[in-house]
Image 1 (cartoon, rainbow, N blue to C red):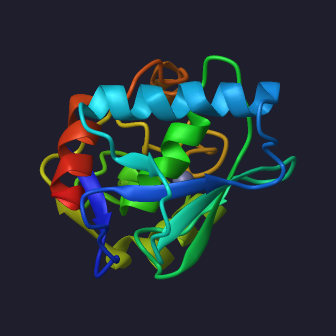
Image 2: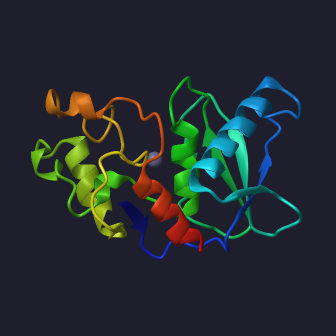
Length: 184
Ligand SMILES: [Zn+2]
């Protein structure tokens, strides 16, 4: 279903957000992001991300050219979601999932490929270093948008992984259940 970072800060029902100046009011970038946030909220069936109205704890969406990044769960105060626009991908939804408190599905204790890492490889070292910081919320969910793609964690897994690496077209049922669990 999902993977949750242990002791991640919880949001109280909603995540107030603002746009960084990289997402100028009325710009194509802001319209693109409006649509992505709507997609996220519509899929969950709840206004998880809501325009900030003076709340002390909030997220700022920052359009970047480098790596995407988001802290996992509520940090307290201002926190930044760095995202890129992509065509048909779910990158920003993935980063929003981190902001809610979700970790990579690859750190699920039942992650089926964990035994296939090449010993000493970067993917194996990442798994060893990180997976104990996370806990399962239900079964492993291969369709989760939080399941990291082959370009990093599964870089050594060819063949069998290719089919699974197709870019997600939607969040999964498990993503929805986990987001609701973390925000209710
Ligand atoms: Zn991620």
